[in-house]
Image (cartoon, rainbow, N blue to C red; front, side):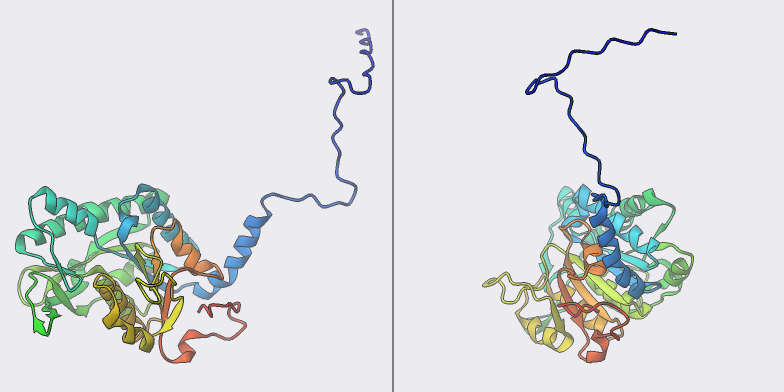
Length: 341
């Protein structure tokens, strides 16, 4: 048996070696957990998860989110979260920044007219290579870091998107802008099969030609809207490099949070050319059965989750003119200032 150790010297008041006393919570007291706000966030999301359960959501991926590594990773996380929350996400992508870079590398001129890329046969080869061989492959890889979920396809595959040559009207005249397509038909069979199998389709905005053996460059905003309507999607989401649709740009940076199809149609002639295909796509979608179309800031990490699963939402939401399309019974979801469907 060892000898008991001798007691140490008693500490004098004010002695720096004085032992600190840890105060325990009183009996019956509730400890404050630092993770509690996270639980509150999940509870806030619950009505929206319930509301969107089993619904198809088409997301157009574009802008700075396509070239910033952190934004790309956050986008992939958002899409996988949607899938595991019971939604059926479909991703449609363009590749503007990457196409511009490759065209510059090959000494080809990038030109836009009426918000659409002038696409020569040489430029079409670059577009096809970049979209299917670079952008799509990288995006599918990011999604599949979270499990074997994503499968890539182009509008050519399974006749998913068919188009004829598009002649935009500029200053009252029809203008030839090359191999740019106007969508004439959508076949959702391949996409629906993938969705039913629990997969995430990632669609490149290239269309087969209805007239010859060539392919067309199709605006990704337009393609996303057409697919959303054909799939009977609940929501179309368009990622941009702006906060949403501005009230009176450039005189004001106030974002319009919600507007009807008729209100949007009146604003179209005043919009910057780059916003026209996006907002025309939103207008087409809500007038062809899609419940809401949303333009959100892709520069904000997790903007998709913020828009779908929070009471405030972000960006601009477009709804049909029928008020019944923008509301649900009070028991279906919480009332919010934005009247978020």
